[in-house]
Image (tube, rainbow, N blue to C red; front, side):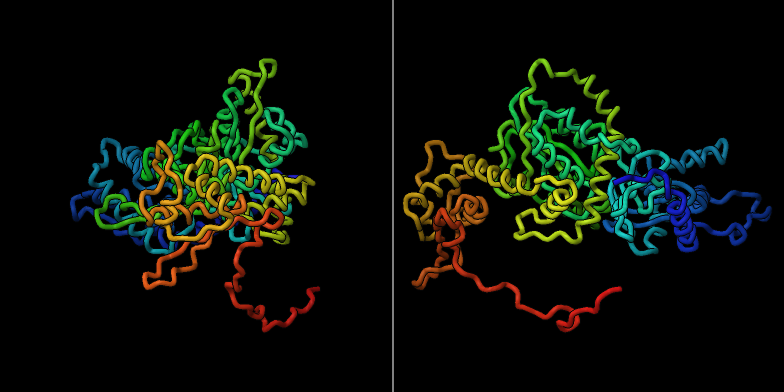
Length: 544
């Protein structure tokens, strides 16, 4: 697959310029001849500073509102980049400087700038919300667009026929202080080999890594969190940093665990991809938050400069974690990870960080070109990919199948096998789950209320924090553990109730036969009725 660099940049630039200029009639320029002229009748007094600032802004920018309720300014004759109105490095700061240049000896006051921003926010609300993307987006035709993060606004457009670098992005991007520029990709047939040479992992693991990197640029699917596992000396942190800097370069690719959900939402809002480094334990709130970030999170926050209005931030993110002990991953998070083991680096092959950084910077354009080639191949076959069975991360599994189909690899099989091992490791790290497994191993089948289950399980000498203390919490814990228990052949059924007048909910725990893990699962009717396909069941005519 050959990428085409700069081959079709001009047509894309021309189309977008036309679109943006057409928006001027809605919310941008006011023709000079229609503005009231100030004659000598008022003594030559200038219009208020706020009015002059608004005029300057409307001559240069159009104004849009994002779906999450944030106003932005977009340069009419510049990159397709959304500038926040009030934040540092945004429109307010730029207009303050332009005002000082345009009116020597005069500086716009804070109140004048605030009044101007309020007017411009109102202009932004005149039109329907417009999607504003961070690093990665899709254009209306379905192409994937990656923002290079450069000052000139260049982007990479990837379709099923190839990729090319365009001078102006066909979709609207925003920037953040956590972003760094990405080098322009180049055509190089050895790009993947050059990446593999920097990593201490076997070929199956490397193929899974390539598939994960490619999937990270598909913005509308969930992405499993990449977990780099290994003992000290395996280079986990450096490897994860390289992976993030391929997808979404940042001066702070590695982050510490956030203190609370608000700190996490700030990090996630500013980066498309990020790495949590040296994870040892994950508190329940963070585990739930990471799960939601994988599949699509939503955070409600107070709107800026208001007391009673809110904004809703919705986002999917690409996550990487480094850890020594995979037992730190438990519950739902264990089902949403791609685990990669890194091998110990011996002294003969260990390189300094300075040497690794220099080598990575040198090969990164070739690696990006090779990854975009694979992404184009995936986009070509993905619509026709069908899986025999749908695992938990079904959309990602389809991408793996597309990679296997185009590259001749076995990433899907390796991923499913590794996922089973991750589930087993997560169970071993949960004493309550292991107690349930031991009970079912002895009884074969156990049935009773949540309170009876809590009494039947011997509490450990040192009770962990996640050990339930009452029937209600016991029922909730069992329900959360059901997917992991199912992975080792223990079926959980909570649909039955006791026959007495109390009608207590019953938990039924059953060991599936070794030859058929699903044999003991009760038969269930179809959840959805069978319906005729669109067109009343008629076969569409052949297309010529």
